[in-house]
Length: 111
Image (cartoon, rainbow, N blue to C red; front, top):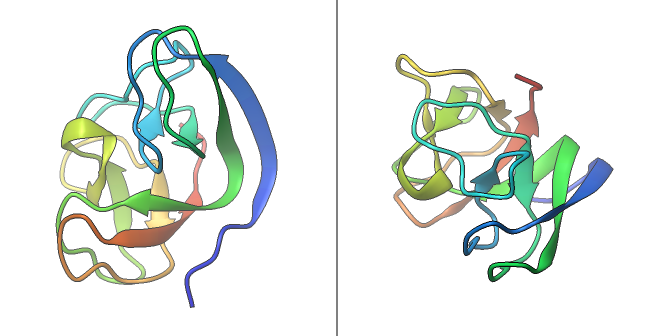
């Protein structure tokens, strides 16, 4: 069962368009591949709009590729979660993603 257990949400102002369920930065933009992330955007936002970001707990994130349950994840293209390769660990997959576009529950890890 995929769920979202948020312990702490912070609000950021979108400096660029943000898609829901993607990893974002403290600067209000989509996180870059292999980079750091503040957390996961709860909703989509246009430039200048406030968006709630889940920064602690578990979050549903759009997968950028297949991910096995238990795998460490990092930021992939377009702020999607991918299995960790050489980037910064931003979470641990609590469910599996069969392919890109699936929602995967991750335990957020501060980075």
